[in-house]
Figure 1 (cartoon, rainbow, N blue to C red):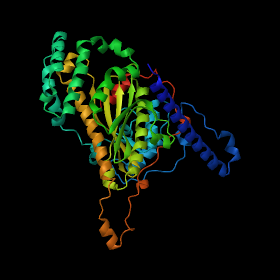
Figure 2 (figure 1 turned 180 degrees about the horizontal axis):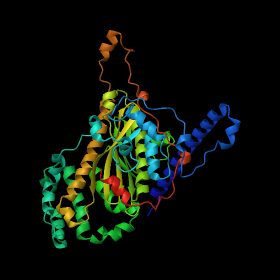
Figure 3 (figure 1 turned 135 degrees about the vertical axis):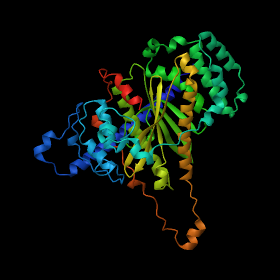
Figure 4 (figure 1 turned 180 degrees about the vertical axis):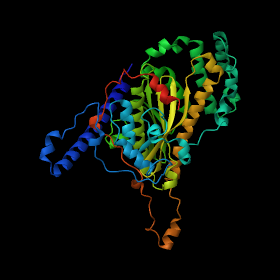
Length: 454
């Protein structure tokens, strides 16, 4: 068996690493030159180097004020962005959780997915009810996915034993996808996903046990459970490529951001390459508070970078359309999947909110209660979000103006272009505070439940 594919992968990774390191070095040299051009204070020279400890004094971080939004919320003094920015100056970073909220506040990303202590919801006393105007409401309609799954779901409604599960699996195997009433691709993917999940309940029941799942690494969780489902569902889309395995996007590389992601969903639209969605995976045994917040921070900041890069590519963007651009963020914790979305709601101000969640069904009761349909519904929602991104790219990449009118009216060079730089802000990330080590094992798994149910 040839090792050529493996050599190509390793070669590409090595090249990618060299490019990234070169850009980091270039940024450091530029920063060093900027620092040397200013007159140093001899009295503070000995303290110029900041200690890279787990406890990070945010008061020492001086940055340009970003808040320039106009969103006023009842109960807050000043704009929402101003309050978020002030919050970043009060957080003492001594854990992954505090680090998460510190960096989101610093980057003007309002997190409305978390109700735990030190969260934005708790500290700012704010709920989505006060931000109804910006609530994500583009939910996929049930008819879109039930058309492909109705007959399949009917087959599993009465599965209450292993013998019935086996008979049901056999019935699914011989079902004609043309009878499912959906497009060929949708019917085929629905049948394959049903088959994949029912195979566990028929032939691989031991792999659904707590003991087995606790032994699974991130790669095992992805390979055994989720990658067959994602590849089956999205594999028919020739314009979408799923990149698995701790890779770095060119958008992050261009900004010298070291955010390697477990899954990147890359969309081709209007001759543009778009980082359409990101995902981080945690094994069941590593689904602890520190892992959740560490992965989520990486995903959110990488998605902010991707959102900025996308908006810059759109030549015919306006402020109304800009607020309709949503970047999906997928977080996999063992056999649970949560989909969030990141969008921009005002100048320099970003919003993170939850869209939906689903769980790989591990019991026959889960199957009977429509667990497989819930997985497929979640995938349809993610698909819709990616398709909506593609639609925005098409709408904002095409010049639909009347060129003849512009020429004859003498307004050829007087068209005011939307200034995206007034809206976006670069990802604020201190590389010296990067923490690529192991997660904190002493943090409780109970903390996951505090945030995953909201």
